[in-house]
Amino acid sequence: MPEKSSHIPQHIAIIMDGNGRWARERGLPRREGHRAGAESVREAVETCKELGTKFLTLYAFSSENWSRPRAEVRALMSLLKDFLRRKTPEMHEQGVRLHAIGRLGDLPENCRAELTRSIEQTSSNTDLNLVLALSYGAREEIVDAARQLAREAVAGELDPESIDNAAFQQHLYTAGIPDPDLLIRTSGESRISNFLLWQISYAEIVITRKLWPDFKGVDLRQAAAEYARRHRRFGAI
Ligand code: FPP
Figure 1 (cartoon, rainbow, N blue to C red):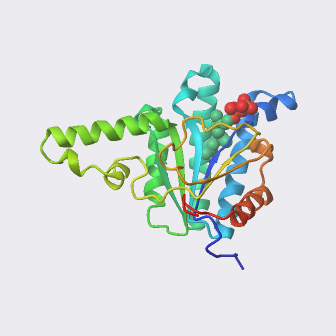
Figure 2 (cartoon, rainbow, N blue to C red):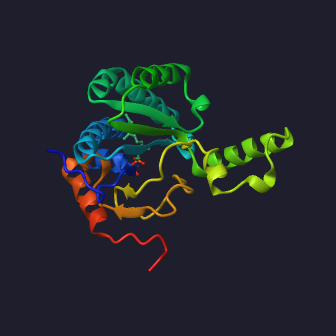
């Protein structure tokens, strides 16, 4: 039986880091690290389903990742496209609904088409929401929200005085998605790297030394258990 309780994080967000180092340690090209990382994605989805977690957000490609060598960007886009094509039927069967956040217009056309197809095919599923952050940057997201609010104000559709946390949140890419309860970063780095800056205000953070391709279901369960042990106070006593 899946364990379900209020101590289970309803939304887990992950900064998947360490693919390159995993490959280097094995004398492999970096793209092999990313390929192994895609397997960990599959395992994370399965484990979230078993735990009863409702949202899993993965930092799959940041705004800054565009500045990597062209061959690596191409390999990542191709991996994403293949992953979506191969895994969508399986995700659909498992009741997984796919979402994407970020400046999706920046993605290559064939990648975007595959993404749109997967999102449409899984749109009626309710067991687990898998949110892929693609061409995503939190500052860019906040700027885009501010720009949209300004447009509405200039058009006379919005009173600037009515802008509060809730109104702002509704203009983020994550509108309608609850804030993450637990943020995990792999590979031992203690950085947020422009990920979900607004949304992680109250998230519990777990950093693990495991490199992303080595991060298995058992590691995700351990992070969820660590989350359950912490006493969440939301700034109160
Ligand atoms: C960070 O490792 C990882 C990425 C920039 C990309 C994450 C992509 C995947 C896990 C594979 C594809 C994803 C999906 C959803 C199919 P790094 O390259 O920065 O590692 P390093 O810090 O060791 O160099």
